[in-house]
Length: 400
Image (cartoon, rainbow, N blue to C red; front, side, top):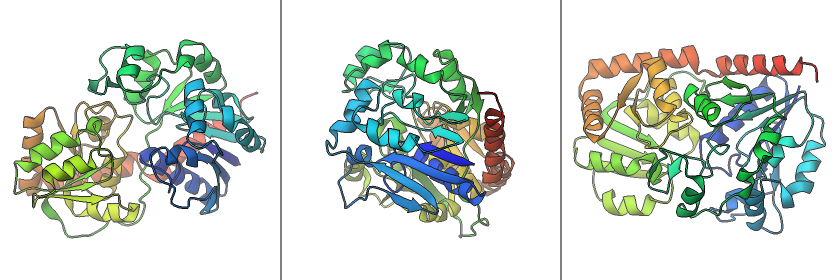
């Protein structure tokens, strides 16, 4: 079959787990003998990154990748974001959608003209993955007024206080009309599915957890029993400040901070001089797995609802348990499913979880074994692809 993937970010011009997943899925489908083409946006990436000689498109392991770059530069994705339509990208997207596809799979398309993009193209199966909350939240992350997790809907004032221009299309019927073009929404967690259903999204939603791209043998790096890993964006909503503040008072515990973001300079200034907190920056995926493998645990301290927790699954593939904030939405679901970690609430419980997992070797070994067995039972590539193709087959066999 021929698959068309439409996503704002695609590696190497990307930031988070959604882009990593799209690439892993695209490459996996090619391995199964399918053809895959991807449309991504270089312009959107350049909104927060400098142009380092980026090319318009690349071939990625036999995945054909097209890149949106308009002479209007940053203005093009901003217009799409505001209007909810492709606008300046219409010609390029129409050229992509003119190709013959059996499956069109949309991902995070907020800077490409969502939701208007959803109505474009023809395919027997049309899917949308819910990598964040853009369908129901103008900030995408349920982070209210740039201060706290959302407790009730005051979207217009929250948008303004968050420093974002209001999206007027959210007060029309555009979202509902566009969603009618889809056969299925794919939610990576039950939490995400429930959030969207309870906020007026009526399209059928299937819960399809993401998978780890790591599918080799278990890495056998020597364990450093007092080492913790944080891997993610360095932003306030990810809870990295709370984590760094806690570990700073625990000099016998080592924290490796992997990633980049707006708080990097502030965090390095505050904690970079401590011998037990190291900032490694953004690392390649292979390097990341090596760090997971010799750490006592990975920590997910997010203080906003995550749609999933791919970091937890990646670590579990390496027999590394997780310490996860209860407030992190769909992320605690993974620990509840595998039993391979500790769920905490508040800094006192975080400290206790860190002490337990770094000082009790029998506990750590038990959680590590449960993390790996849970990964094998629920989050492998083969299990994900079987479930994904079952959904695709169901939709392609339906009458038009």
